[in-house]
Image 1 (cartoon, rainbow, N blue to C red):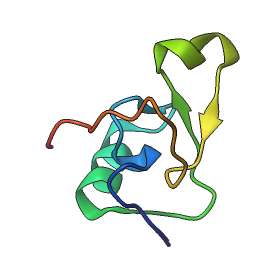
Image 2 (image 1 turned 180 degrees about the vertical axis):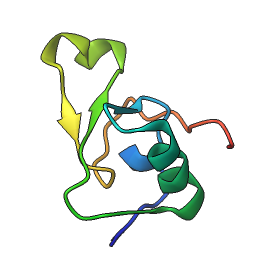
Image 3 (image 1 turned 90 degrees about the vertical axis):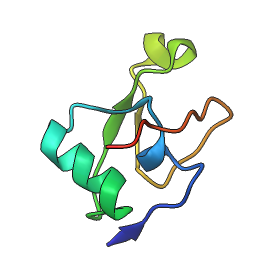
Image 4 (image 1 turned 90 degrees about the horizontal axis):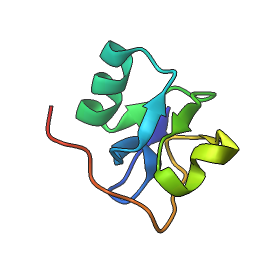
Amino acid sequence: MLQISDGQCGSCRHFGDGIPQDQLVQIRINGTAEHGTIGGCDLATNATMHLKVSPIGSCDGYEAAEAA
């Protein structure tokens, strides 16, 4: 299991494209994700790259996801 901290992609509002909504909610509520979980990043500056990231990644575009 991956442990997700504040400031990492798994807790960012831009993370999760391609991950089923119920799974994404659980990632954000539990602060954990299965190894191998990869989701798209919809941060506008990354859109043209179709960036796929791990929930434990991070970048300067972090914005906290809304509470579930």
